[in-house]
Amino acid sequence: MKTKVLCGIVALVAVSVLFGWYWDISFLKRICTGWMTMKVTTAVCFIVSSFLITMIPKSITREAIYHQFAVATCSFILIFLMVGTLWAKVLDVYIGIEIFMPNKYTDILPSTFSIFGFLLVALAGIVAIFNTRRCSGRLILIGKTLCVIGLVVTSGYLLDASFASMGFLMFDMALHASFLFVLLGYALIASGKKILLTQHVDVR
Image (cartoon, rainbow, N blue to C red; front, side, top):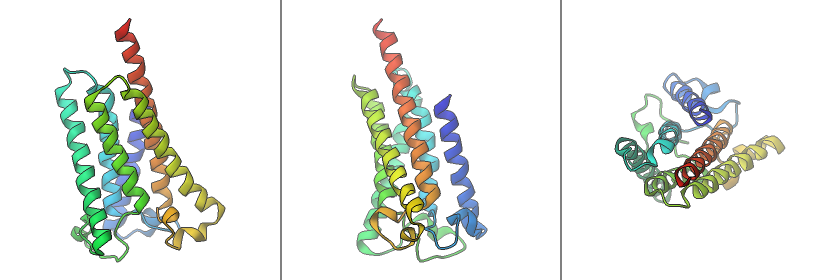
């Protein structure tokens, strides 16, 4: 239940950001003037990630073939989008989802930390599909890492918000994006603990 609630909040905020980009509502995109925007690609990946993490506890049994397929598909989408985004950063070109939006902006590529975070979520999906004995521990570890990423960026805004607009590697993420990574991290931790409890019950 906790996982679904957290992932639901993540998806809801991400959808609101998409509306912000479509209707050019600055508050939804960046919260405060001068702060970093949450990119369209990032918002889409948050929606995919929330669905992926929600499916993880249901995908640990061999009979849950449809849930495993959903987790695998979401993991592939995240890897595809993030590897493409990383490639765009290297080549300095724009190949993200933003090209389909009516309003064009120059700052459309997700942050480096966002790319790393979503690749971790995809890794969590892959770990869940294989469902090894250490599956729950690895999911919890990935969840804690996501929490650290989000908290580090959030602390940057809290300590000195001006750093958030200067393009440093650690602070090139939107504030609400960092908050959503914390929520995804907690959701993964909750999923890992639920799987661990299930494994203990199966052993008994």
